[in-house]
Image 1: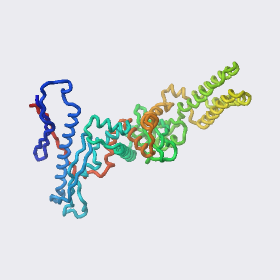
Image 2: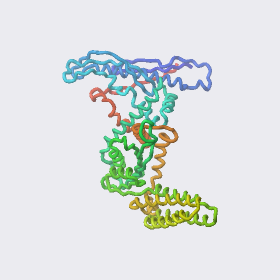
Image 3: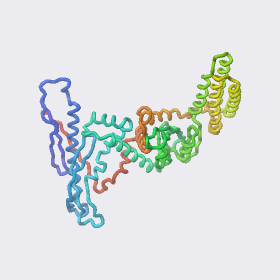
Image 4: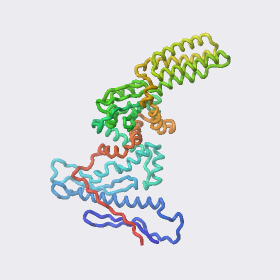
Length: 474
């Protein structure tokens, strides 16, 4: 059997251009490796289709743009250069003529470059979006290798180019988030929950400090819809406005109650307050409060047990810590503080009268108990009855935000990759990663295309043509 693949390009005036993409191949005997197309043959065909199609489209566009829309005369040719377009199906170099202004153009006397109008970034939006998505999920070098494995990219882009394209998409997504934050919600939600927490990313060596702070928020409404928000406060532009836009997207209005779950730190709390359009209810996250109690419980396990009296004292201390946890779980803040104070007095007496091993353990427990007392006293106004709230199936913990933080930061930007980041680079990377998590990268990137170089004017937009690819068997 012989077969060949032919590309037919049908122009607006009916002219047909035929290009043979693969030579005639004759198969005498069949084998598993000879059934269908191989990956190499498929990549070569896609590259050939892209080459002929892009060149034909640019020539057609330049021919249309050369004719003046006002007087109908042809613009004089100034010079002719070349321009490269990077796409998922290869890099195509096309001729890029430039035209001098028409004689009828009195107010605008600038050189016209039609190819620059349709190739402002020298790459297709789909290529840029795909590179940004894989660059946000994988290390840049691995993402570039994975793309070139299955697509006819031609000469692979450098790692720095991949990084710059990913961060450029992040900057456009941020601009679009700011611009669209003022839109009104389509429907009002009954309630909105903002679970907000902070994380840290290792800083590059040229920046002061070993790490910098990242704020992460998970917003959900009563219908179960969830979105993720992440930002580096030092680099964010209109951070509050961006988070408010997410709240509006989930139906938050001036009458919608907003519950803010946090660890009580000023940064996350103030961001949630400023972004919430309706009444605010602060709740201290049970996860962080329980972890404070757990630290004391872990220290109590190291209580010496050489003597029977020490074992009994350690058992009483462990039981007392669980009672403190129980009282906090039921919102009994005053009783919990009283019990912490009584336990501190007993531990301090043990520290003064005990031998060296017991004294060291008692000092550690006393220090952690004082930290717990300070934390509970400072956050007493936002500690609620967690048991009752849990039975009503209302949120009490930011544990789901902790898992989101692990995915956003640690799996790509911290422990597993051993990377250091600049605050600006981490901020733009998080914009892409959150868009991927929310499943809105394709839509957001298509809308954010308006923030690139100036596009073609409405009067010069080309009507799409249908190009046919035929596969002929002989």
